[in-house]
Length: 606
Image (cartoon, rainbow, N blue to C red):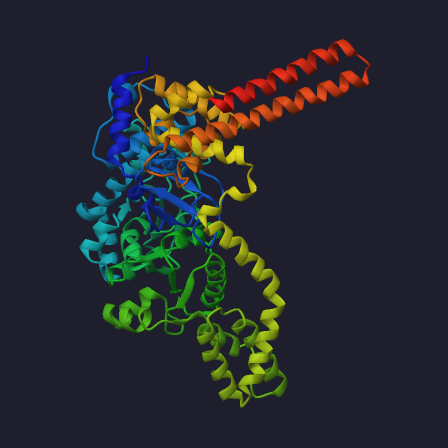
């Protein structure tokens, strides 16, 4: 028998963590009818096909087929085990794990990742304490104050200081029970040529890099002297992948969700300065260009991204690359008005927070306006050849704008500046849009299909018996009495193999005295494929009031198909017996055919 206290605890954790709230921390959800929809976090898409049911406490993507409950969602999103997902959800709901969970041993890889995570939390506290409360940290604290950071901001970002001592942190970590070799792997310690362990970040200001849960997973460390390099960053580890994270996402996320808009800057210090200046929906990349994953992550939360990169040549190039990625995933991109040669921190220090909010962030321009200004600098518009090349390049970009009003705005500006006919420019745009039209129409059609949940999978293309099995299973998931009726009439004789396996588990689930609970049944299933199928079937639009006639009709459709298949098989065997000139076998099979037809006739007359 399963541990009842353990089972009860799991059920309590699921009940305490509403799936809409948990999924909403990762995906921007909008209510449509009974369910919520958003962009799937498990595959790339531009229109929502990811559905969450508050009533059934399950999720399902009509695009990629993923499905499950709140626990399996967290497992997938965090890449963690069932036990770790329960532990995380328990922490979120303010509960402690029972002994039955504490005694379970995690895998060696999981244990190492947990040790690395814990070491980062201890060092975050230590570095922050050393910065604020020791004479060793006084110079670093003065440096941060000179950079304009308040005590409140230093606390919010848990900024710290690593003392310029080779073995202080080594000793601290060893006393806490962490193996030095694991800490080297975590990027917290280094090994000298003499095979001695030393603090990797010694003598530097420490900026913790936190994941979306607010846990430190890496550090960025800045020197206070002329020491090179200026910054040392944590390497990638089991818990830190810089291309999959955004700095300050943990603090910015509620503001991003509320405003449906994010401000993207290039570095940690720019993000900290912007946040202190009142731009609380700010996030930053971590020393690399924006990645596909980061762009998709942002799109799940927002419709609009304001890019606020450095206003130098490298920053302009990075802006165009980032905008291209964001536009590709469906974000509307705006560009902040940053003064030439400045970054956000420079601007705030020079002109103040209010000016930064009003003139830089709120004074943003559309990406197209920014791009056309950038494009102008590539040409000498005093020469005829360059003017024509500029106009052609500008038309290439304007043609990609979907909104007619916005296109008209840029066409008018172009026509007025170069004394051209607007109709001529529109003809050029129509030509360009026709050229990309077939490909674009195909993309839009694919996105439409993915975004229409009721067409996944297309029931019109499924045989009647297949749909009958799906709807029968949907009703059985809602009501154990219907499951009992179907078990009596059909048993496990479903014709689709996956349905046959699913119904076997469902019968067993109810026989263990479980009530109808789709979310709990998900955990009962042994593999992801069955969970995905169950989520898909559970979201079929079945009636709240069950009709006995409807259930019986579904059963009869399945029986009829089963009978048709059996009859077809016998008729094939009869033909083979006749071909082999075996009259005895042929007569025997003919009798079986007659008996089968008789049984079906009796069945229909019941």
